[in-house]
Length: 304
Image (cartoon, rainbow, N blue to C red; front, top):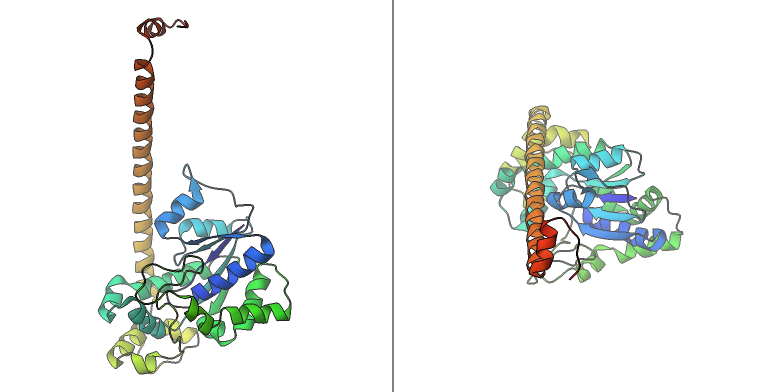
């Protein structure tokens, strides 16, 4: 069984991942493959161009992007499970600027917010997905643990719920994350240096400049308002339908391009393997005695 941990960037998906692997490993005998980039997911979920059968051992994978393969798996009948977290886009922006040391212009140029909304609809449009807001996830960790366990079909006691909730409290997570000067991450829990910050709900009110708040609300206020996030500006809101359609077109185009690149790489690898096999055969032939090569050239099997 596949267990996918999705979520917007900076929305608590790592916390959900850590809780999920704690439960899956202990109660289901599961394993984790950690965080996987989109390109890595192709080789992980496919073999010879076809989706591989669901693993017998529950296997946890963390990723932000809901790829076409993940969509196919979740919409199929393999029993796959997924978890998805989302957050106020203004707080996502504040947290991303801090964690990745980016400017607002960087985030705008990378289209991280647009991509996050596209993936929100892709993840939540699949079956078998437990959707949780950042507010609920950090506001009541014990309830979050119970929901994750229930979605995985695991029955646990109240004491165990409390133990896991305390184990992955912000204070404990900060102790586990690497120092700011360190490179890389804690591979087992997917914690980067500085990964767990203050995590305050509504931090944008203090940390986000007014003009950035205004732009985010004008562009994405419709999405935020529909999900219960209070807006500071009651002015006109842009419909996100148009840019959503644009992003989906871009994603579809990028997906087709990626599939073409993968096919070209597979074809190149086959050519390389064929050349290697040919070289091996030639080397073996050269190591044989002249008489044996002569008989083989005539199609006659002779020893010596």
